[in-house]
Image (cartoon, rainbow, N blue to C red; front, side, top):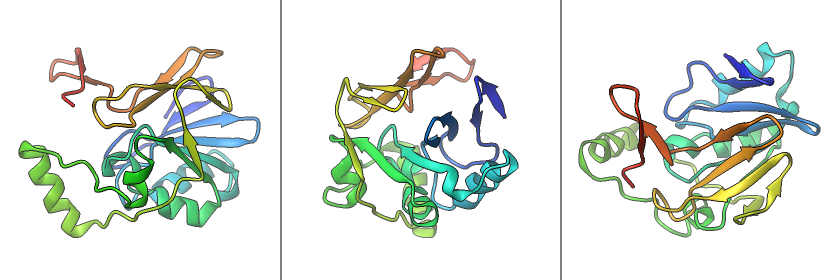
Length: 178
């Protein structure tokens, strides 16, 4: 679904929202959702009249499996580079264990983890707070994970916030529970 300024949310992706954003060098994908989303993302790109090689960069707001679960497969299939903040790069590569989620959601993630394998991958680009990657400014928002970030495109007034902001059951904005 096109949101604005050529930015699309990939319909049907499981887990986190996945966004495709056009840039001069090709499309940027912000978050990949759960493992198994690669085909859905690539089909969406094809529906836009593009091919796999048009995916230039995979930007991850953080390393949780519901945001980075398809990163390794997409990198393999497209050659796109993966970028993540320095605080979460070790979790993505397997050098540090992924964050343990508590409560009911954690229980569900542990069950899903038995059926969906998180494939570790080394980032090509390690991001730091305040830098720019293409048209996007990297804004560190630690708390949900050590390396949570938001990406801001000031030129078109768009921000990708990952889990830094969520909504309540009533649709009101709420901070991430951490």
